[in-house]
Amino acid sequence: MKQPEQSYTAIETAHGFVFFTDTTEGQKNRQDFLQFMADHYFDPHFNLGPVNVYRAEGVLKDGSYVNPGEGLYPEYAYLQMDKTPEMELVYRNEMKPTWEDFGSFCHNMHCTSSHRNRNIADILEEIESKDRKLLELSKQGTASDIRQQIEETGQDKALLDKLLKQYYDVRGHRTVGNILLRPRSPVHDRVDHRNHENCYNSTCKSIII
Image (cartoon, rainbow, N blue to C red; front, side):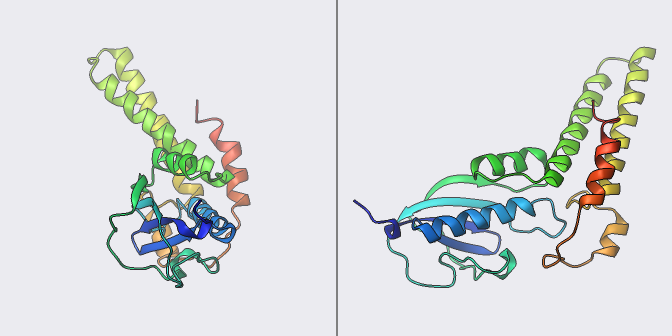
């Protein structure tokens, strides 16, 4: 029977690899690492994707890239290397700033979603839904009722986009003002989003249907 230290998970990011053994320490640190990525998924300076997760067997040499557990993800000592033959790919995510990729990551990596990120994902999903509806309507001719539906759907989409950019600074959806305000990574900051959440809750209910 293999011991916990004889099997491990390798996580490949844009920065390189980190490794987590199946020991108690390794499993905890792995989940902490994944949860931290989930918590910061929509942050404007999040840049770890795409992410590949591998399973493998073997004993790892000691190193700062094995079971990292302190510091924030940009500070980890990622190992620059190529995938080795014994690594079996079990999950891949492009980590694009979409509700689909975010939901897939949280589901497959067993991470929880913060209130803020759920709000962002909900808005992004609704914007995509409006885009699909506009595309469908555009194929249905130019009758007056169709034109009215297109106008109303376009207005709904514009309001959702305004809501997203007014209350959240989301990578891939940034305004010039937010870029100028936060030109560099604020990873070490602990931003309080509660005021934004309250504004969102009172505004979004009138837009998302």
